Length: 337
Image (tube, rainbow, N blue to C red; front, side):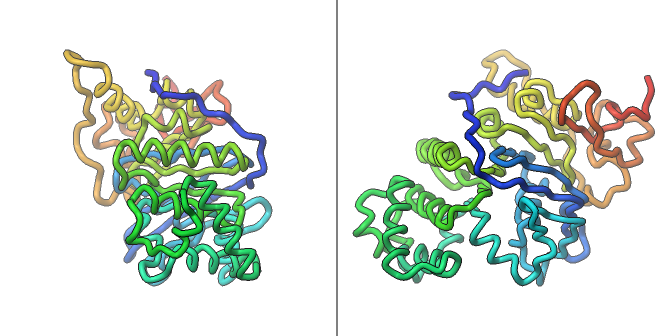
Protein backbone atom coordinates (compact mmCIF):
# COMPACT_ATOMS: atom_id res chain seq x y z
CA UNK A 1 0.00 0.00 0.00
CA UNK A 2 1.60 3.27 -1.08
CA UNK A 3 0.60 6.77 -0.06
CA UNK A 4 1.21 9.10 -2.98
CA UNK A 5 2.42 12.60 -2.15
CA UNK A 6 3.18 15.66 -4.28
CA UNK A 7 6.77 16.03 -3.19
CA UNK A 8 9.38 14.13 -1.22
CA UNK A 9 10.52 15.48 2.10
CA UNK A 10 14.02 16.89 2.47
CA UNK A 11 15.76 16.18 5.75
CA UNK A 12 17.67 19.26 6.93
CA UNK A 13 21.06 19.56 8.56
CA UNK A 14 20.05 19.38 12.20
CA UNK A 15 20.14 22.28 14.63
CA UNK A 16 17.04 21.03 16.42
CA UNK A 17 16.80 19.35 19.80
CA UNK A 18 16.17 15.75 20.74
CA UNK A 19 12.86 15.15 22.51
CA UNK A 20 12.01 12.11 24.59
CA UNK A 21 8.72 11.27 26.27
CA UNK A 22 8.61 8.28 28.59
CA UNK A 23 5.49 6.91 30.26
CA UNK A 24 3.08 9.80 29.63
CA UNK A 25 -0.39 9.30 31.11
CA UNK A 26 -3.10 11.98 31.13
CA UNK A 27 -6.38 11.80 33.05
CA UNK A 28 -9.38 14.11 33.10
CA UNK A 29 -11.69 13.71 36.07
CA UNK A 30 -10.19 10.32 36.85
CA UNK A 31 -10.77 9.03 33.31
CA UNK A 32 -7.67 8.14 31.30
CA UNK A 33 -7.28 9.99 28.00
CA UNK A 34 -3.66 9.02 27.21
CA UNK A 35 -2.16 5.83 28.59
CA UNK A 36 1.57 5.26 29.08
CA UNK A 37 2.78 6.78 25.80
CA UNK A 38 6.51 6.85 25.03
CA UNK A 39 8.41 8.07 21.97
CA UNK A 40 11.70 9.68 21.00
CA UNK A 41 12.55 12.36 18.47
CA UNK A 42 16.13 12.72 17.20
CA UNK A 43 17.60 16.19 16.61
CA UNK A 44 16.18 17.61 13.38
CA UNK A 45 13.72 14.73 12.95
CA UNK A 46 10.03 15.11 12.05
CA UNK A 47 7.47 12.87 13.75
CA UNK A 48 3.90 12.69 12.49
CA UNK A 49 1.31 11.63 15.07
CA UNK A 50 -1.85 10.31 13.42
CA UNK A 51 -5.14 8.87 14.56
CA UNK A 52 -8.86 9.54 14.41
CA UNK A 53 -10.55 12.26 16.44
CA UNK A 54 -10.39 11.52 20.15
CA UNK A 55 -7.41 9.17 19.89
CA UNK A 56 -5.26 11.37 22.14
CA UNK A 57 -2.92 12.94 19.58
CA UNK A 58 -3.15 16.55 20.75
CA UNK A 59 -3.47 15.60 24.41
CA UNK A 60 -0.22 13.65 24.12
CA UNK A 61 1.73 16.60 22.72
CA UNK A 62 0.16 19.24 24.96
CA UNK A 63 0.55 17.07 28.05
CA UNK A 64 4.21 16.42 27.30
CA UNK A 65 5.11 20.12 27.14
CA UNK A 66 2.88 21.28 30.00
CA UNK A 67 0.12 23.03 28.06
CA UNK A 68 -2.82 21.26 29.71
CA UNK A 69 -4.70 23.09 32.46
CA UNK A 70 -3.56 21.52 35.78
CA UNK A 71 -6.97 22.32 37.24
CA UNK A 72 -8.60 19.75 34.96
CA UNK A 73 -5.78 17.50 33.72
CA UNK A 74 -3.68 15.11 35.77
CA UNK A 75 -0.40 14.44 33.95
CA UNK A 76 2.09 11.74 34.94
CA UNK A 77 5.40 10.93 33.26
CA UNK A 78 8.57 9.07 34.05
CA UNK A 79 10.36 11.87 32.21
CA UNK A 80 10.07 14.36 29.34
CA UNK A 81 13.47 15.48 28.05
CA UNK A 82 14.42 18.22 25.61
CA UNK A 83 18.05 17.37 24.96
CA UNK A 84 19.40 16.98 28.52
CA UNK A 85 16.71 19.13 30.17
CA UNK A 86 14.04 17.15 32.03
CA UNK A 87 10.90 19.23 31.54
CA UNK A 88 8.93 17.15 34.01
CA UNK A 89 11.28 18.29 36.80
CA UNK A 90 11.08 22.02 36.03
CA UNK A 91 7.62 22.71 37.47
CA UNK A 92 7.27 26.53 37.54
CA UNK A 93 10.24 27.03 35.20
CA UNK A 94 8.69 25.01 32.37
CA UNK A 95 6.90 27.98 30.71
CA UNK A 96 10.28 29.61 30.11
CA UNK A 97 11.52 26.55 28.23
CA UNK A 98 8.25 26.33 26.33
CA UNK A 99 8.43 29.94 25.18
CA UNK A 100 12.12 29.90 24.38
CA UNK A 101 13.00 26.42 23.11
CA UNK A 102 9.63 24.96 22.04
CA UNK A 103 7.25 26.68 19.63
CA UNK A 104 3.63 25.61 19.15
CA UNK A 105 1.30 26.25 16.20
CA UNK A 106 -2.29 25.58 17.24
CA UNK A 107 -5.22 24.36 15.17
CA UNK A 108 -7.29 27.53 15.59
CA UNK A 109 -5.29 30.78 15.29
CA UNK A 110 -8.12 32.83 16.79
CA UNK A 111 -7.73 30.88 20.03
CA UNK A 112 -3.95 31.31 20.03
CA UNK A 113 -4.08 35.12 19.65
CA UNK A 114 -5.42 37.74 22.05
CA UNK A 115 -8.24 39.58 20.23
CA UNK A 116 -7.72 42.88 22.11
CA UNK A 117 -3.96 43.24 21.49
CA UNK A 118 -2.25 44.27 18.27
CA UNK A 119 -0.04 41.82 16.43
CA UNK A 120 2.96 43.99 17.27
CA UNK A 121 2.19 43.84 20.98
CA UNK A 122 1.75 40.09 20.96
CA UNK A 123 4.92 39.39 18.99
CA UNK A 124 7.14 41.86 20.83
CA UNK A 125 5.90 41.01 24.33
CA UNK A 126 6.72 37.37 23.64
CA UNK A 127 10.27 38.19 22.53
CA UNK A 128 10.92 40.73 25.27
CA UNK A 129 9.84 38.24 27.91
CA UNK A 130 11.93 35.31 26.70
CA UNK A 131 14.85 36.97 24.88
CA UNK A 132 15.14 40.11 27.03
CA UNK A 133 15.11 42.38 23.98
CA UNK A 134 14.50 46.12 24.08
CA UNK A 135 11.39 47.47 22.35
CA UNK A 136 13.19 48.66 19.21
CA UNK A 137 15.05 45.40 18.65
CA UNK A 138 11.91 43.34 19.29
CA UNK A 139 9.94 45.40 16.76
CA UNK A 140 12.62 44.98 14.09
CA UNK A 141 12.64 41.25 14.75
CA UNK A 142 8.84 41.14 14.50
CA UNK A 143 8.97 42.79 11.07
CA UNK A 144 11.54 40.26 9.89
CA UNK A 145 9.43 37.36 11.17
CA UNK A 146 6.30 38.60 9.40
CA UNK A 147 8.27 38.80 6.18
CA UNK A 148 9.60 35.28 6.71
CA UNK A 149 6.07 33.87 6.99
CA UNK A 150 4.82 35.77 3.94
CA UNK A 151 2.94 38.72 5.48
CA UNK A 152 3.25 41.62 3.04
CA UNK A 153 3.16 45.29 4.08
CA UNK A 154 4.36 44.18 7.51
CA UNK A 155 5.16 47.70 8.73
CA UNK A 156 1.51 48.72 8.45
CA UNK A 157 0.02 45.41 9.52
CA UNK A 158 1.94 45.26 12.78
CA UNK A 159 -0.64 47.66 14.19
CA UNK A 160 -3.59 45.45 13.13
CA UNK A 161 -5.71 43.38 15.49
CA UNK A 162 -6.41 39.68 14.84
CA UNK A 163 -9.92 40.32 13.49
CA UNK A 164 -8.41 42.35 10.64
CA UNK A 165 -6.72 39.27 9.12
CA UNK A 166 -8.06 36.28 7.20
CA UNK A 167 -7.75 32.78 8.69
CA UNK A 168 -4.74 31.95 6.55
CA UNK A 169 -2.97 35.18 7.45
CA UNK A 170 -3.68 34.58 11.14
CA UNK A 171 -2.13 31.14 10.94
CA UNK A 172 0.97 32.67 9.37
CA UNK A 173 1.12 35.08 12.31
CA UNK A 174 0.86 32.26 14.84
CA UNK A 175 3.71 30.54 13.00
CA UNK A 176 5.74 33.74 13.36
CA UNK A 177 4.98 33.77 17.09
CA UNK A 178 6.01 30.13 17.41
CA UNK A 179 9.33 30.94 15.70
CA UNK A 180 9.93 34.25 17.45
CA UNK A 181 12.46 32.96 19.98
CA UNK A 182 14.29 30.59 17.61
CA UNK A 183 12.93 27.33 19.08
CA UNK A 184 14.65 23.99 18.61
CA UNK A 185 11.39 22.02 18.54
CA UNK A 186 8.20 23.02 16.70
CA UNK A 187 4.87 21.35 17.49
CA UNK A 188 2.19 21.81 14.82
CA UNK A 189 -1.19 20.72 16.18
CA UNK A 190 -3.38 20.15 13.09
CA UNK A 191 -2.37 23.62 11.83
CA UNK A 192 -4.40 23.48 8.61
CA UNK A 193 -7.70 21.97 9.79
CA UNK A 194 -9.53 25.31 10.06
CA UNK A 195 -8.35 26.54 6.63
CA UNK A 196 -9.64 26.06 3.08
CA UNK A 197 -7.79 23.70 0.75
CA UNK A 198 -5.69 26.31 -1.07
CA UNK A 199 -4.57 27.99 2.13
CA UNK A 200 -3.87 24.59 3.70
CA UNK A 201 -1.33 23.82 0.99
CA UNK A 202 0.34 27.22 1.46
CA UNK A 203 0.64 26.77 5.23
CA UNK A 204 2.06 23.25 4.85
CA UNK A 205 4.65 24.51 2.35
CA UNK A 206 5.53 27.39 4.66
CA UNK A 207 6.11 25.23 7.74
CA UNK A 208 8.15 22.69 5.78
CA UNK A 209 10.32 25.36 4.17
CA UNK A 210 10.98 26.94 7.57
CA UNK A 211 11.82 23.55 9.02
CA UNK A 212 14.36 22.97 6.24
CA UNK A 213 15.87 26.43 6.60
CA UNK A 214 16.16 26.28 10.39
CA UNK A 215 16.80 22.58 10.88
CA UNK A 216 14.00 22.30 13.44
CA UNK A 217 12.83 19.16 15.13
CA UNK A 218 9.13 18.82 14.32
CA UNK A 219 6.06 17.09 15.73
CA UNK A 220 3.10 17.31 13.35
CA UNK A 221 -0.27 16.16 14.68
CA UNK A 222 -2.77 15.29 11.98
CA UNK A 223 -5.61 13.08 10.82
CA UNK A 224 -4.57 13.69 7.17
CA UNK A 225 -2.70 10.55 6.15
CA UNK A 226 -1.91 11.93 2.70
CA UNK A 227 0.43 14.49 4.23
CA UNK A 228 2.48 12.15 6.35
CA UNK A 229 4.96 10.79 3.81
CA UNK A 230 5.77 14.34 2.80
CA UNK A 231 6.02 15.75 6.31
CA UNK A 232 7.39 13.01 8.52
CA UNK A 233 10.56 10.98 8.89
CA UNK A 234 8.69 8.73 11.31
CA UNK A 235 5.01 8.14 12.01
CA UNK A 236 3.27 7.29 15.29
CA UNK A 237 -0.26 5.83 15.12
CA UNK A 238 -2.57 6.32 18.11
CA UNK A 239 -5.80 4.52 18.94
CA UNK A 240 -8.00 5.06 22.01
CA UNK A 241 -5.32 6.95 23.92
CA UNK A 242 -2.53 4.47 23.25
CA UNK A 243 0.37 4.33 20.84
CA UNK A 244 -0.13 1.22 18.69
CA UNK A 245 2.64 1.55 16.08
CA UNK A 246 5.63 3.79 15.45
CA UNK A 247 8.23 3.50 12.73
CA UNK A 248 9.85 5.02 9.63
CA UNK A 249 7.26 6.85 7.55
CA UNK A 250 7.97 5.01 4.30
CA UNK A 251 7.84 1.57 5.91
CA UNK A 252 4.79 2.19 8.08
CA UNK A 253 2.72 3.87 5.39
CA UNK A 254 3.56 1.26 2.75
CA UNK A 255 3.30 -1.78 5.06
CA UNK A 256 1.45 -0.99 8.31
CA UNK A 257 1.64 -3.85 10.81
CA UNK A 258 -0.86 -3.15 13.57
CA UNK A 259 -4.37 -4.19 12.44
CA UNK A 260 -5.74 -0.74 13.27
CA UNK A 261 -2.98 1.04 11.34
CA UNK A 262 -3.55 -1.29 8.38
CA UNK A 263 -7.30 -0.65 8.46
CA UNK A 264 -6.84 3.09 8.73
CA UNK A 265 -4.49 3.22 5.74
CA UNK A 266 -6.72 0.91 3.71
CA UNK A 267 -9.72 3.14 4.39
CA UNK A 268 -7.91 6.15 2.99
CA UNK A 269 -6.43 4.23 0.08
CA UNK A 270 -9.90 3.05 -0.98
CA UNK A 271 -10.98 6.67 -1.39
CA UNK A 272 -8.29 7.26 -4.02
CA UNK A 273 -8.44 4.17 -6.18
CA UNK A 274 -11.39 5.21 -8.32
CA UNK A 275 -14.85 4.05 -9.27
CA UNK A 276 -15.63 0.37 -8.87
CA UNK A 277 -13.20 -0.17 -6.00
CA UNK A 278 -14.62 -1.67 -2.82
CA UNK A 279 -14.74 0.91 -0.05
CA UNK A 280 -12.83 -0.31 3.00
CA UNK A 281 -14.15 0.41 6.49
CA UNK A 282 -13.28 -0.65 10.02
CA UNK A 283 -16.32 -2.22 11.65
CA UNK A 284 -17.47 -0.87 15.01
CA UNK A 285 -16.47 2.21 16.98
CA UNK A 286 -13.62 3.12 19.35
CA UNK A 287 -14.42 2.14 22.95
CA UNK A 288 -15.35 4.94 25.32
CA UNK A 289 -13.03 3.51 27.99
CA UNK A 290 -10.23 2.42 25.66
CA UNK A 291 -7.24 3.63 27.71
CA UNK A 292 -8.66 1.96 30.83
CA UNK A 293 -9.26 -1.43 29.16
CA UNK A 294 -7.02 -4.20 30.51
CA UNK A 295 -6.39 -5.66 27.06
CA UNK A 296 -5.89 -4.28 23.57
CA UNK A 297 -8.42 -1.51 22.99
CA UNK A 298 -8.75 -2.50 19.33
CA UNK A 299 -9.50 -6.17 20.06
CA UNK A 300 -13.32 -5.85 19.86
CA UNK A 301 -12.97 -4.56 16.27
CA UNK A 302 -9.94 -6.59 15.19
CA UNK A 303 -10.37 -9.41 12.63
CA UNK A 304 -7.26 -11.12 14.05
CA UNK A 305 -8.11 -10.98 17.76
CA UNK A 306 -7.49 -14.08 19.85
CA UNK A 307 -7.49 -14.99 23.55
CA UNK A 308 -4.28 -13.26 24.51
CA UNK A 309 -5.63 -9.91 23.25
CA UNK A 310 -7.53 -9.69 26.56
CA UNK A 311 -4.08 -8.88 28.00
CA UNK A 312 -2.53 -5.62 26.91
CA UNK A 313 0.27 -6.21 24.37
CA UNK A 314 3.65 -4.58 25.00
CA UNK A 315 5.29 -2.36 22.42
CA UNK A 316 7.77 -4.64 20.66
CA UNK A 317 10.17 -4.28 17.73
CA UNK A 318 9.18 -5.88 14.44
CA UNK A 319 11.48 -8.78 13.54
CA UNK A 320 14.20 -7.57 11.18
CA UNK A 321 13.00 -3.95 11.30
CA UNK A 322 15.00 -0.97 12.48
CA UNK A 323 13.25 1.31 15.00
CA UNK A 324 9.80 0.03 14.01
CA UNK A 325 7.66 -0.99 16.98
CA UNK A 326 4.11 -2.29 17.21
CA UNK A 327 1.83 -3.04 20.17
CA UNK A 328 0.21 -6.25 18.93
CA UNK A 329 0.47 -9.86 20.05
CA UNK A 330 0.66 -10.93 16.40
CA UNK A 331 4.17 -9.49 16.25
CA UNK A 332 5.35 -10.29 19.77
CA UNK A 333 8.09 -12.88 20.24
CA UNK A 334 6.17 -14.44 23.14
CA UNK A 335 3.52 -15.67 20.68
CA UNK A 336 4.51 -18.66 18.59
CA UNK A 337 2.84 -19.78 15.42
